Length: 417
Image 1 (cartoon, rainbow, N blue to C red):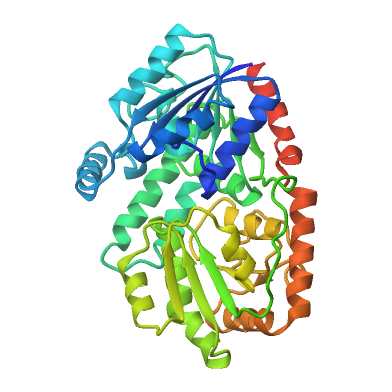
Image 2 (image 1 turned 90 degrees about the vertical axis):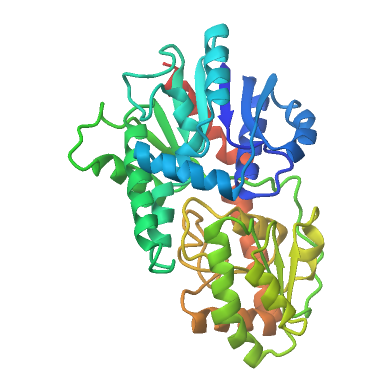
């Protein structure tokens, strides 16, 4: 098949959740014999990564993307005027619309694959998706949701300051309606978990009295995958008393969870294990993270972006993924499982991953329970080893990319009929 793949990101290097997912999908499509034409936004610093992506794509076309707070304010005001989600409005660049329309008019494609919700808008003309205003009627449309995005904002609304809570809830509703309309307008939707599948279908049902353009198309669950053949377990150095947490720190749900851990959980850990150190790794750490580290007398170390994560995993006794508002699957958990490092996370954090509490992973939702789980792992080498071995087995059996992404062949076959 010939596929037009519209992505929000250049997926190299695969050093964040969305990049890992998109990179593995592109590799799978290449190895399955499909011809992929990639269209993506690219920041200036990402241009050096384009040659790597060309190894798995027939063509790569990019549109420059610049972000700033001033631009975000402008797009937020415009989103209110147009009654569209800010998440959509911010990426609605005319250059991208023109590029997609040009490629569709000049080339023959069997499938158009929209990767993440902001990119689905380029499949349609006008402000809202509709089966009546598609850009081109020939290719069939596949929407890869990554997350049920509306649930992320819905959950965040409980944790943000009361002053902005109405804005977050309004954004959640706008995204919910938008995702519901998308499901009624594309040929096939892919979700990464059953929870997301149900949330996306619920969005289609809750269009507030608006009749959908047609019934939602099929929604398949295809989990995010990891590469267990290439990524081997780390040579662990037990007894370090180091806790590792990581993520893209300008992404609000990531920052919120880690902030909760630093403020509510880590002091409880230190009260029992005073020689413990928290290592925070991730791009664009918030200022309050840096300030907390400066006041911690070395107990909190904020590293920012690091090009190679493996040394940090080797030194860590435990990885914490304290997610309170999120959707989809946490690649951070799959990565730690693959590398054989014990994980403590929340119920929300483990959504979409089939792993057993206290056998493969430790699950805790309150500060006291979370600190208890972390301290157990820090103090019990036998438990560390058990969790590391069991979690590695989980990804080998259920989440290796060659196994998981074979399901995409069926999706593409059904969408092209």
